[in-house]
Length: 125
Image (cartoon, rainbow, N blue to C red):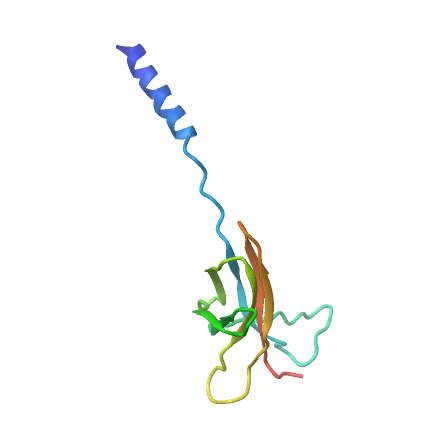
């Protein structure tokens, strides 16, 4: 009886080991951020960019909108996209001109998530 239990446990363990690993996706991931965050950056007093919750439009090589996404409060996003070259353009936030979105190009390759930062210019100088 004990040998049957051990055999069953070994069989379950081997079956679990044979489970195929999940395939990597294809798309983009990264952070939407705004900067500079202070007028003068010093070596001993860095001013890192701040994360930004924003809506970003994804356009293909012909300029047609493919999709849009909204980054989280921490600025992070992850989006499934087919391989190709895209331009990411953030939508204006609020009624003013700042922060100003900066268009960003990205090339997506099969089987990977390309990491990219989508930038907004804060206007601080």
